[in-house]
Length: 238
Image 1: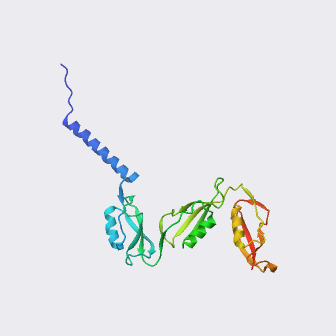
Image 2: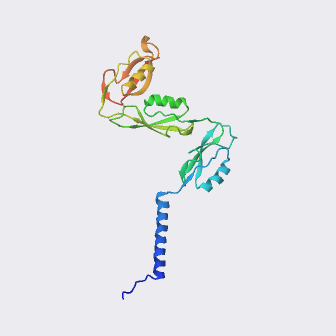
Image 3: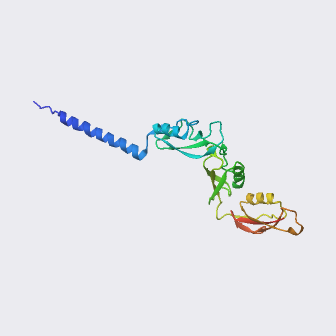
């Protein structure tokens, strides 16, 4: 007769223990290396910073104050937050909050794809400070806004800085400087940017009878061949 092999209870216990240890190690690996544990961004509007801190500790997230805003909430309480309430976030996420106070709040407009000077005017008129980073791109039109940070739609204090990534065109692209003499300064700047060039410095002169605010000279001069993205300096009549 063949003898039946038997697995002892001790061996089974060892196997179970090994599997449990491996499972535990796997979970620890996921937590610390992939941070797969998520939470939600709780509603903080109307709470004092102290109340918000107590609430957020239960969700394993924290907050930072990024500015003051006018709101219907009492002064010193939280008037707005980013991400919005009930948004799924990773544990450890820092929630940006705005305290009810003396500045206005708004959503950053989308200016991606626009000419950077138009985009800058749009943001400046909204009270934002603009920072520009240029990027050499042979496929994206010169002076076009490629990206922005913070992204459009973000809730922001108007005192915040918005950084624009702007195409400087291809360094091998050659363009012709337009004839700007006699143009009003506003029209001249528009002609410069339309030619894939940048507006440089502006100086004034008595003009010798030229119309006030009209272009007297440019550097480089009209019809010069220059690389796209070259700055054109203007002299205008007082």
